[in-house]
Length: 379
Image 1 (cartoon, rainbow, N blue to C red):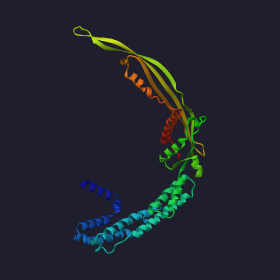
Image 2: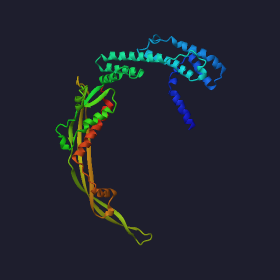
Image 3: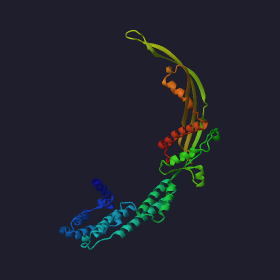
Image 4: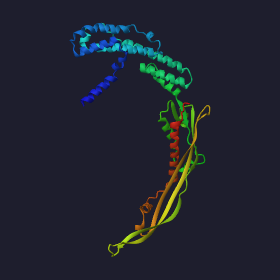
């Protein structure tokens, strides 16, 4: 348990802001940190007490002249965040010193950079915001994605900056490819004929595809799109070109069984076994149904008509059950014969609705896998 707590403490320290800022430490900063560590262990450390004031002054002085001009090579916004990190080191030393009474008593020119940090964050957020607004003037998805990225940076710099959160939603909406999934078309197959109450397939594919987290893509039904006044970028059409549920056929046949069993032994020395051949006839009734379906899917661009996908996905369903009776000697029967005989009370012939449902799901499973692995809606 002790070892676990030590590892946990090291993990927390490794994730702390102070650890994150270490890569910005100058040699002077490291000197200040080392002197503070000595004083934490021994508040009477003479050398540390003598060196700390000048070491801190030297370390802080190097950053007092920093401006965005030092980071003109960086994009707008990023240059101010570099200042935030540099000032963050100063603020870190400030907080460590005031938290240690012996250090606070000897360092008199402490620099609280908290206001500079907040000003730099505000300036960064403002530059990110302006950059995003410029992208919002262009009417295309790529610009909307860039606008969202800059709005997000502004919000990270200063959470809730101006109206950035509502603008992020707007930018994301503009960047999103809207895909309308039309209800499945069963051609000449009347829906009520199959006994279904509604077409689950359309909503199923919408839910499954939305849960796949396609980048900047959202799927809607026609009803939802109309209600929200959404203009489609892509269309998904589902057509069952075939949906055949076969009838139950019956085939009867007989299997003749024979087996030798020992009925006794001769009186000779040594005795020899006496065998008798027994017979039985197995009367088998085989019932079977074969059904098939074909789902055709076309996904295309609404404006150009270009296909992103156009293919057919087959589904098959085979149902078969065999029952049996027998005449003759039961000891001549095999285990397979008994399985058929004992199966007589387990005949559950599927109705047409059940078979059609399985066929549709089989086709849909192939289609969904194809879309997830082979369709790029953003192209």
